[in-house]
Every structure is written in C-alpha cells, then in structure tokens.
Length: 478
Ligand SMILES: Cc1cc2nc3c(=O)[nH]c(=O)nc-3n(C[C@H](O)[C@H](O)[C@H](O)COP(=O)(O)OP(=O)(O)OC[C@H]3O[C@@H](n4cnc5c(N)ncnc54)[C@H](O)[C@@H]3O)c2cc1C
Ligand code: FES
Image 1 (cartoon, rainbow, N blue to C red):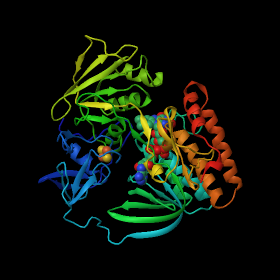
Image 2 (tube, rainbow, N blue to C red):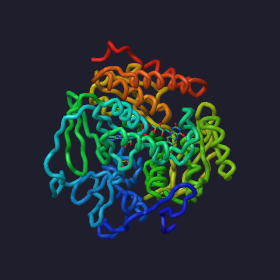
Image 3 (spheres, protein in one colour):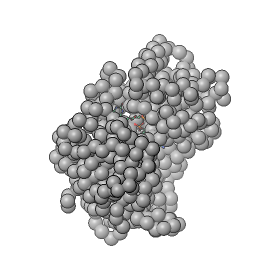
Image 4 (tube, helix red, strand yellow):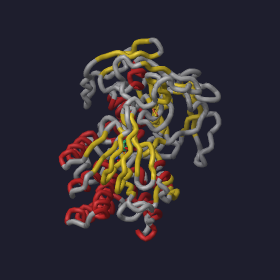
C-alpha cells in the first residue's frame, strides 16, 4: 500500500486543505494543513519514531493523543516534542534524537515573553465532561477558560463515527462526532473562552496552572478548577510488545478517523469489549483487513449488536485466547496467539501464527489523574472505575476545595456519564464561587437523576459500586 491516506470513506469526509512539505532527516515529507507531524510521517511509511533508552530497541507511536512518550522527536532544534499532537508546518526540520537528547541549540520557548493572567474558572480538558462543565458555569455568568491540548475540541468524541450506545435520551443513536460538535457550538454560544493547542503542564498552589501553548509558557491564576483530562490506554505484557505496529485502539482511531490515515493492512485486534469491536468495525469501513479479534475472557465483552456486525463481515472473534508474542525485528510482521483455560493458563499445543502488521490493543483505559495528584487530591484504588481515582463529593468536588473532577478522569464509564458529571461540576463550581440559581439547582438535580438511570442494570452495577466507594462528605474537603 503506497498511499496510506484515506480519500473515500462511507461516513467521514477528509477534506484536505493546503499541501506542503517539511524536512525529516534530509527527506522532504508531504503534509496537509491540519495534519500532525507523526501522521504525515506515518503516511510516508515511517514506523520507527524513537528508540528505547537502554536497549536501543525501535519504538513506534502508541497513543496518538500526547499521553505516552513514544513519538518524541526534535523539531526545529527543540527536543522531546510530542509529534502526535504537534501540527506539521511548512519548512520545519524534524529529526529523531538518540536515546539521550542533546542540549537544545535554540531558545526553548519560541513564543517570547511569558503570559500571566488572573481568571475565574479554569476547565482542563475539552471532551464531553469539560465542555458540559464549561457550558453550565458560563451560562450562569462565570468567566470560564477551557484549555485543551488538542487542536479540535470534543475529546474522544471527535473520532467516534459510530452511533452512540449511551442511554441518555438525547445522545443514544447520535454519532459521537456530532455530539462533540453540538457541545462545542453551545460552549461558544454561552461565551466560554476556548484555548485549543494549550497543554496544561502542572498545578501550583493556590490554583495556579501552567500551560504550554505554541512554545510559550502561560500562567493562569484561577479561583476554581474543573479537571476533565480523560483517560490513558492500558498496555498488555507479551514478548516484543514494544515493536512499532503495537498500537492502542484510541491511537488507531485517531490516526484513522481524525487524520484519515490507515494504520496498516492486516490488523489483529486484542480485546472484544465495545472499544475493540467498534474500532474493529471502523477499520473494516476504512478498507483495512481485520484478521481476527481475540478475547481472554470466555465470552465477548461488548454488546452483541457490535459483535454481530463484525461477524457478518467475516471476522472471527475467538474467546479464551491471548497473544503470546509479536513477531518482527524492526516492526510487527505477525503474532503468535494461543488458547487459555478457565484459570488463564496457556493450553499447550494451541499456539498459532497470525499474519498481521498491526496489533491493536483494546484492553481498557485508566483514569488520567497526574494533575490531581500534583494538586494533593486524595486518591483511592477503585478497580470498578478503572484504577486510581480521586475521592469526591456528590457534587464532584475533590478533597481539595475548589478543585472539581468529571468524566473518565473520575472513573472509566461512558461519554454520557462524563457529560452528566460535567454538568454537576459546572453547576457546583458556580455555586461555590457565587450562589445557587434556579439553573444550577435544576442542572444538578437532572444530572444526578440521569446518573442514577445510567448506573442501573447489569452494566451499571459495577461503576455504581465503585462510585459508592470513593464518594465522601464535603467536610473531608480541605
Ligand atoms: C473507541 C471508543 C468508543 C467509544 N464509544 C462510546 C459510546 O458509544 N458511547 C459512550 O457513551 N462512550 C463511548 N466511549 C467513551 C467516551 O468516548 C469517553 O468515556 C468520553 O469521551 C470521556 O469524556 P471525558 O470528557 O472525560 O474525556 P475525553 O473525551 O478523553 O476528553 C479529555 C480531553 O482532555 C484533553 N487533555 C488531557 N490532558 C490534557 C492536558 N494536560 N492539557 C490540556 N488538555 C488535556 C484531551 O486532549 C481531551 O480532549 C468510547 C471510547 C472509545 C475509545
Ligand atoms: S505521546 Fe505521541 S504517541 Fe503517545
């Protein structure tokens, strides 16, 4: 496959803008307006983005959303740039650095003087949780600044081409991308100040945050914060799991649905939860061969409706199977899979080679809570919510007064839950800084009722228990 960019798609329209070139280690690389450096390099066929420090093994990208370190390169002399979230620019010079980066031969910041500003509310993360929190606080009159490191707001929604499985009456059946667009429009309408391309680097007392935006350091001194930074993808341990070609499902989705670039020709999908099934189907829609889906549990984890679509397309889903190793030296050239018994022990004699150039890991997400730890929010390990989560009140305030949390960062559930939690956090932070209004009271009431509905039934019972474990009374908050 020479051209890896998708030009025809049953749902998405990749309307590529201006075409230009940049330099990569002496080679001219084609890119289109709005493409990241990593995407343009991937489309050109590059697989080795960096190498491991000690063993100097090749590494490809993994998450494609700026949350790991697999794509760090030197850009115009600045080392350690996450190329998966940095837009390509005409004439820029990009190169891989060795295991140890050299001291930069340029001014680190290229944006000139630092900017410092006092603001009322900082919302971190522009997914459904952050957008909804911003909308509620802003429509009641707060001055809200919403920061997102990405170029497009909407979080995970911007790559969800499927009709949503959420049970929220307004969202079920709507495509994720459309929900994201609607929320963004509403946020703009109520006057939320949107800062895209703005990565929050750290927290400093008292509610000061530092932001990196276009190479410039910015400091915001806020009165209240809603953290809605989402989740990170889980990894899986198997031989050669660091080879280029082993990618997270979200990374594959970003490359394919946001950037319009196919990840490979033959994909082995690990995990049959909704994410594995949905990304598997989206790969088929993009014309990629999904060779099989394997699942360690004795039965399929996701909804039958998604599994049936995959099976109708002729893709086998094999339960009680795991991956033993990836085959290849410089990149994935195949995989060995095998059966496991009810105690997850390998069944001898069932090893089998699978031909593939991509191994896609859809093995769950963990809440991204680094910022909250920095802010000294008390955490607890809650397996029902995907890992360590902050303790929070029913109004989504963490144990640090004035710092709220919502969405996947508070526990892995669904986009509808993220939006409902955002609604509560947005109303509650407004009340804390001002007073209760008819709108904040109603918003909290409706959202709490919505969450109760979402957490009913066999799928809802698990997160419900998790939320119970980490909910605290307001007196605990400092
Ligand atoms: C393949 C797939 C299919 C899914 N399908 C469904 C579905 O059908 N129905 C459903 O309800 N849910 C679905 N989900 C889940 C849903 O997308 C997430 O639960 C939801 O997006 C979480 O919202 P959020 O706002 O908490 O986080 P996100 O949507 O992840 O948004 C977080 C935002 O924070 C930004 N950010 C993170 N760190 C920083 C930082 N340091 N500085 C600045 N910005 C930062 C990110 O750029 C991102 O935009 C699916 C998820 C996947 C991966
Ligand atoms: S940070 Fe770029 S691939 Fe993970």
